[in-house]
Amino acid sequence: MPLSIRNQLPGTITAITPGEVMATVKLRLDGGQDLTAAITLEAVKDLGLAEGTAVTALVKATEISLATAPIDGLSIRNRLPGTITGIATGAAVASVKIAVEGGALTAVITRDATTDLALSPGTPVVALVKATEVALTTA
Image (cartoon, rainbow, N blue to C red; front, side, top):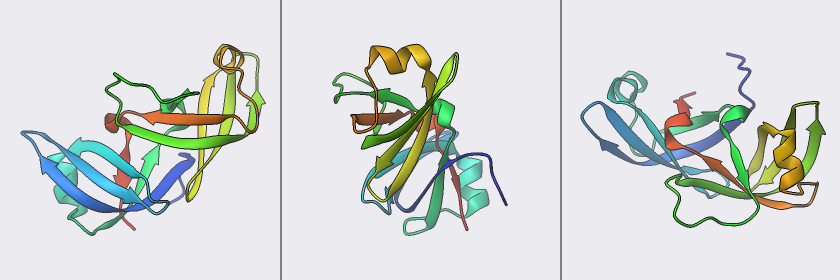
C-alpha cells in the first residue's frame, strides 16, 4: 500500500508494555536506534504484535522536531541523531532531509526555525518524535 508518509523506519519489536487502553511498544530500528510507539491495545492485538515481530515505524514529517544539541529535561523519548543533507525552503515552511543511522528522515518545520537554528547541509541535529506520533505497520 503506497503511503504519503515519507518517514518509514524498519525495525523489530523488543518489548510491549500494556496499559489500560494504550501500550508502549519498543523497537530496535535496523540502524540500531531504539524507538518507542504508544498505540492502542486494540492495535497491538489487531496487528498481532509480539517481541521479535518485524514492523515499520511511520512518522509524518510534520511530527518531527529538530534540535541542534541534546536536550535534558524533555519528555520526548524518541531522539534520533543525524546530519542534515538538504533543505528546501518555502515562504512559510521548510522540508529538511536528515541522514540517520540506517536511513533518512524528512522533517517539516517553519522557515523561521531553520534560520533561528542556523540549519544547513552538514549541520548535526537530533530528530525528536513523541511516542504518540509513531504509528506501526507489519509487512
